[in-house]
Length: 318
Length: 147
Image 1 (cartoon, one colour):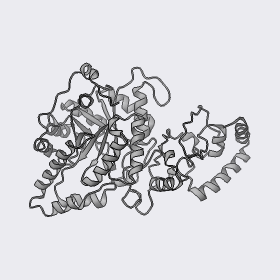
Image 2 (cartoon, helix red, strand yellow):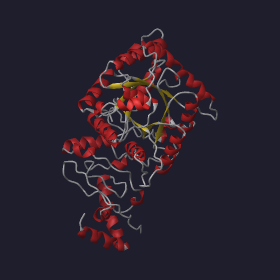
Image 3 (tube, helix red, strand yellow):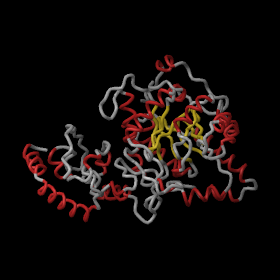
Image 4 (spheres, chains in turn blue, cyan):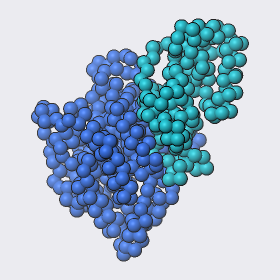
């Protein structure tokens, strides 16, 4: 047990977890976040708060995470390396921990030209593996400078993996590096290409990595075939199978079909060995989450045991 | 590295003109051959002799998630993904094991200094031409003066 966060306790108890995702508002009012919390409370075990995703300015992920706590959900704060150097990242992490945030997802971040302020300077002082290592060091009580932290934070550290990008062997090497650097859980890109995902998952299992880290696989409900085509053509690193596109194209009601497809993927993932949870990414469609969770048969959500009891039952996973 | 190379580095760093000549020679060679980005802490020998700092995100520990299916960069679709190149070259050279090394954060003080002299002085990892992965512990040393 590292942090004792709800997400960590559930994972170590052996439960199959669900994570949601919320993008903070482009505005200076927290009401939007509190409202979105209603879609997640009781339906998922933790919610990701994106950090200026696709390099578009939004409310900071740290403050949004604090508001999510206020709204009664558990946040997973995302932290990208694009906007901050190592000094800012470390101080933000300390502040975040003090504010009650226990889960952090370390990312490199989309390149600044993907957003609407391509003229900005990209920092990329650390990369995601180094950031994971830094957080692990902070958990152990030291900053990058070697200064001692009194008291140190205790984050549940996450990393990202893309099962669909080539070359596969390099992806596994990088995943192993992240685990070695200190990642406790891994979240992936959404699955729209089952054969490719299976290939990656079996490579992960062959390397024994699913025993060392909790793998939480992404799914995404889509509303139209246009969204799928956009992701296939414009979002690098995404893989959409022709089967998915055909299915959405021929659907009478694409919205319904999108939900059905997502639910099927979720049910399939539950049966996949090595997968310990699902990360639902309803981009700008948070209100669909309760329906997805219910139809996939994940209700009611389990309650975590108190920290002391979980420690006794802790699995071999790090 | 050794007492001898440390003495060379120390001597060179004391003489600005000599140091600049070394740096110029190093840049001339490494920029032309490897597209060197002058980080001053060369990891070419770990990355199958492809400079990872040419990546727009300067990824030192492997590719980001955005590599396109045809092996192109997500930021510049007409350029190859650097880590794709590194992987292909490492595979060809039998140096995949080397890619498993964790690289510590870049010491920004070493940017635009001579990586050769930094290597001689023992500030950075020495050139490693073996195919296996070897873990090397580095002592903490002050950066060179900037001329």
